Length: 415
Ligand code: MRU
Image (tube, rainbow, N blue to C red; front, side, top):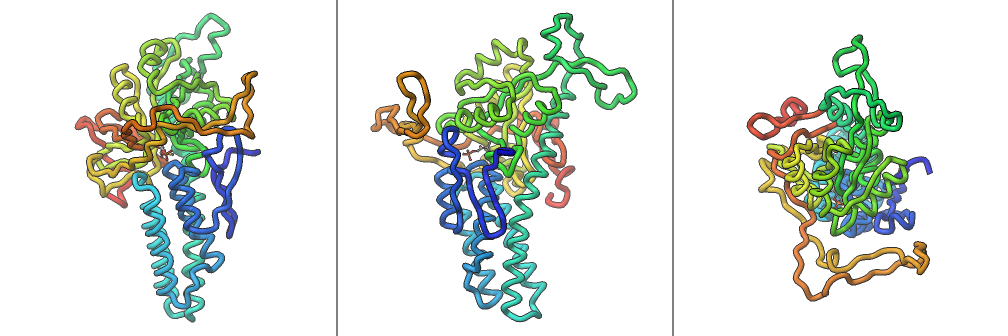
């Protein structure tokens, strides 16, 4: 396998990796209709803000390729596209990427209808379908380029936060340092720096995107550039995206990493910050409001508070498609509540008496009294004042003295 792929697509065919079966089984489901995409997103077989948007966009591309619209006029084609997109929008509400993709796809389809209004009706329908398919495929392509840029900008941002260090005499310790020219001082003699360790939450990697990832993409880039000492990932209760997915990606990529429970983060910062040079918490985003308040996986806010208390940078990695300039602050972000069984039950592969995992046998077990009342918000909002920088594919935006973010410099066209 070349690289982890959550989404496999060729024109007319879409396959989605069933993330509920990871890390034990690697099974791709064919997604041929918008209903199948809706179900796949809702049940979290695919998840992560960019991946949700891509799957929804491509599912309709597949329907249109196979002419499921059955339309005879351009108005019928547009009506079909708009209705299918509105339906898909209801699958998961918090991440803004899906809404942004839908807006873009509707505009592209409408533009194609206007541009071909003098042609035969049949040609007009075909032109709209073609324009839609190309726009959906571009969302997939752009996401990958975007993630690589976020990875690069994020790694450079974190590297710039560090002062040069003295090269250790202990040979074993030397592998935890790297030597390079200090930023912006080309020509001066190279200096030695300590590699850094970072913590991430949830899953923001190849499995949450078209590839590479956002926050996990920064970790990948840090590792590739030889700046990374160690990655820590949280379990991410209740759905365990950290232990099921991020841990799997880190092992797969051979990135030195350790899994901890969400409740161990304070102890990690208190006991290992100096020893491991824990320099940043790097997380993704489902929606960044105009002032920088960020909705992300439940537990993110607690990490931000802990990071501030320990003088550790808190960095959000988000494509500009996750920045919602129409939402003034986090107070207006709709947070998805999920089923109580996510807390009271758990699924996994069976472990035999010798400690061997039998991937052919899975079980769902109860881990709480099933009668207990449960509150299960899937996301929380981290106020902008706790975030040091937001890394996008267009560069970083740092928190202003007022404690908010000004996205005008990187998104003047949408401001
Ligand atoms: O509920 P999930 O697994 O879809 O939540 C995912 C997250 O919160 C991610 O951090 C976010 O979507 C960014 S993914 C690049």
